[in-house]
Image 1 (cartoon, rainbow, N blue to C red):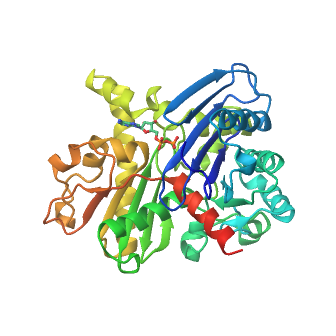
Image 2 (cartoon, rainbow, N blue to C red):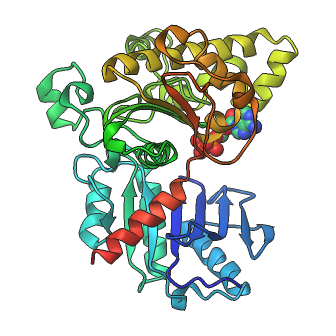
Length: 401
Ligand code: ADP
């Protein structure tokens, strides 16, 4: 059994799920990981992987605490007593830090109440993240908990990029501004891209495209984000698996007034029944590719809308940056879909962007360059690793005391 001393347990709690990973922050080695799904629902299950074995169990998990308890027993069965294993920290992904949190933060009762206070900004996410924090604290009271915020990397967005053009008093009263999300991934990937290129982040202008089920783009000048596609909530920006991304806000008013949909119904429509799924019934790019190959028009249209939006952001960010050194693809779609990458950057040779077809179609799990040697802009694929980034930030907070 591998030594878990000094490891960080990373929690990513969703409304009905809990993902966890036990990781050594320095080496990045993953000692164990698991996922509990459909918590509080019928047919909940948990999968735990450790020491090269994976176990899935279907059982009743009434709440997140029950999931954490079950996970703890899986660890114990593998010879790891979490409470006495010498863990450095439990690192928690927290989606929204509002205006209060700019840095990874040691969790205290005051921090818990502040995360609770700003929960209306992310009503689906923050309460779930909090439940994860409280469950960890109940079971592992002697291990410090650190909250790592998805918004933190973007807290310094220039005012012009962070501000919506609405009544400034209404905006101030309700903390309405563009916060940005996926910050942990954009920060990690942009740093890895600089490392790969053997350049200092301070000298690089980058566009990072995090294309997973959720998707976001960022423009980063010398290590500082100057714009990002997600806004006050993770609904703005790119077309996503099930989220619409940018729409005319008038559409919401129309659906409410004319189609007689309630605000909650519109919420579900835009977050769960839009994006690729709304356009063609599927949100997984592997299935969409198969459907396109079979001549499915809706799948082709969904793909075209997705690419059109992506290119619009790439173009806008190139202008915002003035000079682009690197464009980096990451997350499930960005790391795996050669056709998305090719179409996103097709015909941009005049802007110094040339993707090499052969390099692009090569499948690999490591950071790599997919542009030609003479492309002025380096195009990269860099796997993201939010768990490792959270583990490292949590360990740094604990070390700083
Ligand atoms: P999440 O936002 O849930 O973290 P991920 O980053 O894991 O999402 O990305 C999940 C998405 O990645 C899937 O919905 C699928 O569209 C896409 N994906 C995963 N593997 C492949 C692949 N081999 N080819 C194309 N798309 C893929």
